[in-house]
Image (cartoon, rainbow, N blue to C red; front, side):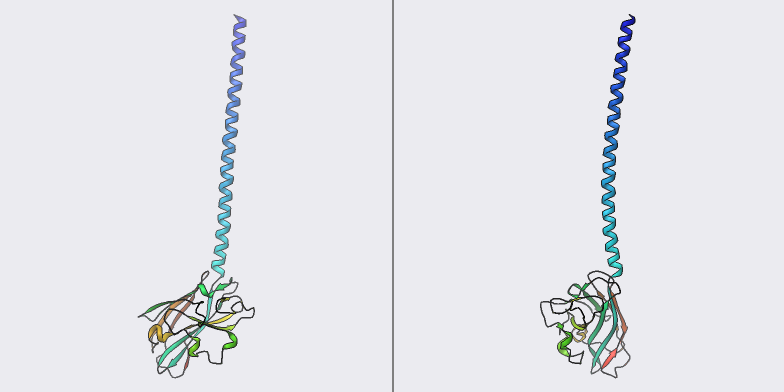
Length: 220
């Protein structure tokens, strides 16, 4: 009887040891799976945070700055508008082919793009003949804006199909207001935005003078 009890006791001890080992292995496996999931999640979140940070930095630091806006008066109506722009300080390269101009005179709103395939919408720095408001420099329609290069030291905006500007570049975005609004008249309120592909837009906001006494008017 005593031997039987000892045998049963030894068997119980063995069963408890095997059970403990199974529980331990299960705990290790569960902990390993949990750790793997946490590592994958943290890696994914880190990658997403870095991407978001880069995009946010680019969005905040990039953009267009409007230097000034001038208009050309003919018979008491502004028929052409010259918007002089440059990249903001620290801005990434800006492709003007992907830029949109939104502009309204309180009655009509136009969305203008650059037609790089047209070619006629582009004027190189060397082709300026001294008159910024030469009719041939402007598009002659109400759907596109033209580009007139004023300063481009690195030739990043050197041709009709390569209109990228970067630090130090100055260009004119020309609008044919005669086509867009049948001209701008005295006291017209004009506003809008020059919206690049990435970054902050340049803001257009001015009121035409009460009377036009000279040919070239500084509006903003």
